[in-house]
Length: 272
Image (tube, rainbow, N blue to C red; front, side):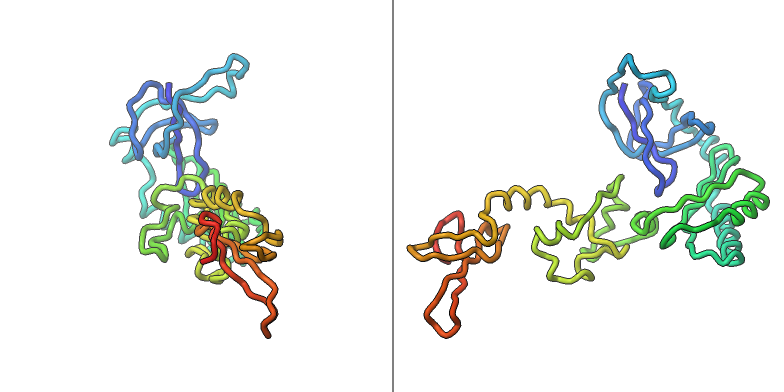
C-alpha cells in the first residue's frame, strides 16, 4: 500500500497514513483515526509504497485512511464564520490578559471536542490563564500552538517580489532552513537583506533551489587566497564568480596603484 501525507491545518505538521488501497488525489479530504479521535484532513503528498517491518510494534504501525470524506461529513465540520467568531473572541481575551501574541488561525476537530489556536510570538508566552478562560467559553478542550512567522506567510501570504504566488502557499509542504551562507555562496548577500528576504521577513525559500548547483560549481574552483600562475605571472585569487566559473586574480604591478586585478576564466584558462 502507498504511504499518504495528510495535513489537518495549513500550519500543522504533515502526518503519514496508509492509502488502504484507496485511489486518492492531491487535495482530497479523507477521514482518519488519530490518537485523539476521528479527523478529516487533506491529502498533501504521496511517499510511495510502504515497507512493513516485523520489528514495528502495533502502536507504531501506520494507521490506514478510513475513507474519502463525503459531503455530509464535510458539512459537519466547523464553518469559516464560526472560526472567525472564535478568533475574534480569542483575540479579545488575549488583550484582556495583556499577552504579547498574535492569533493567526483556529482548527476545530471533526467531532468539535477540541480547538487548537495557532499564534505567533517573539518568545515564550505564559498563556495558562488564557487557556482556562477559552476552555470555559467554548466548553471544549482548548490548545494553543505557537508557529513561526514563515508559517504565517504560508497561511496568509499572497504574492512574492517575483510576481508569482508564494512558493510556501503553492507547493512547499515543509519549510527548509535558509541560511546566510546560502546567500554568500550565491553571491547575493551584497544586495541587502531587504532584497533577498520574503514577505515573512526571513531569507527567501528560493535560495535553497539552486544551492546544490552552486555547491557543485564552487567545489571545482580553487580556494580564495591560493597562489596561481597566469601567463608567467604569479598572482593571488581574491574572489570567485561561481556561475561564470571565473576567478578574480590580483597581480603585483609597477604602476602607481601597486596591483592589478584580472578576471580569469577557469574553463578557457585565459584572460578575459
